[in-house]
Image 1 (cartoon, rainbow, N blue to C red):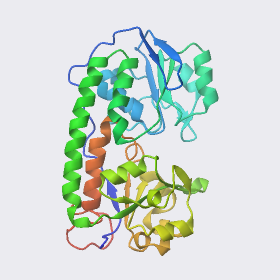
Image 2: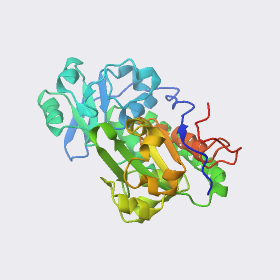
Image 3: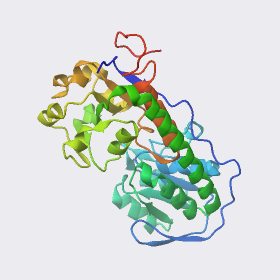
Length: 323
């Protein structure tokens, strides 16, 4: 398998909000992921906070983006970038910043924390709805409907879920066609934060396994029996024989790019490392799933298999990223 050097996957657009957004019908009473009953009476000032920006993107796609009053660091929707950020030190909720925004409802999950802050917000009298933090293709529709139910726009939720499901099907077909000549590339998702000394690889149930499957690849971490997120093991990585690394852009940058990646134990002893076979994508998109997933999948498919992709059939490259 010939690799043509590192590539950065770029989404060409963002999910469009439903064309005829509904006015929330409130109050709603839902049983959240923890089994707690939560009643929402006001959806004028919404916060939707999780590690991957999925919840805020979903609120935006439901046509309620103008009601969002703040965001987490991972929310990547361009029109929401001017909202105040209420997370610090990466993905830690900042109680003071949140309370200053006087939200009328908060949607969040256990991918973000600390739990003490979520409890503090509940004690302040804010309806806090804990959502399922699972991220994969199978739950995208259910997550959209769940957010829509909380915010009193179930019809918009059904419309968006159906539209996204159709687009996912189209994107998967497009990527499958692109991958036909690539003979089941062996992929692994690395989560690195070089400044913090965090070097993990993601396996079964992490979402990365599902992303790799959608890309037509073999998840070598899952194949080796790894579940969830685990510290990177050099011997195990070499034994898994990856052809290609998938990474978040900030993670790759934190270790000095594709060249710096070779300094991570085990990487230089793999074909993917030697060939610089790395595809990175913005942190806010690569594992967010949600309504943005079809766009994400197309961008990654192009970066892996397209004419200028890392495994593409275009002219030979000197290993630099195309402009």
